[in-house]
Amino acid sequence: MPVTNPWLAGPSPTARLDRDRLEERILNLLSSQNMCVLATTGPDGPLATPVRYHHLDFTLMFTAVGSSPKMRNIAADPRVSIGVFAPLVGQASSRGAQVFGRARVLSEGDPDFDHHWPAFRWQSDHVERSRPLDEPPTGPLVVVAAQRIVYTEHWLRREGYAPRQFWRA
Image (cartoon, rainbow, N blue to C red; front, top):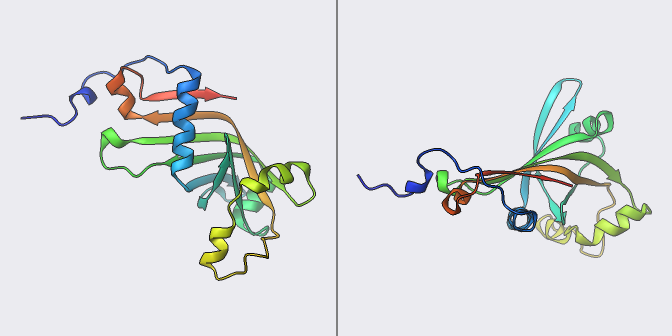
């Protein structure tokens, strides 16, 4: 019987991508998706929340209502994990990243807010909600600078690389 992707059979290669190539692949994934799953921990245990995100290099950002469960959890414990993934068709298309970092809640006037805000594309959300484009959101901006990323791409096996790669800031 013919096999579509024979390179997926057998043991996985162990070779590592060089940092530049790994960063290029991670940035490609972050740029080609806009949804993630944010994992926080609170008094009731873990909480995994789908969130629309934007990114600036290896920093992911989103807005949220200050009283939401995810924001309460972040206030109690800023350590988060964020899962970003491409649509899965089969094993060969498996591609995603687990981003680990600390969430910081920024408000207007904070120098880091002014640095990140221009990369946050709030306009599309306003158009969807029929809100005026001359009234940007006033809520806080949550930024998570990646400290560590576990990147998975099974297509890498085709080139002789391990499907799971590790990045650190």
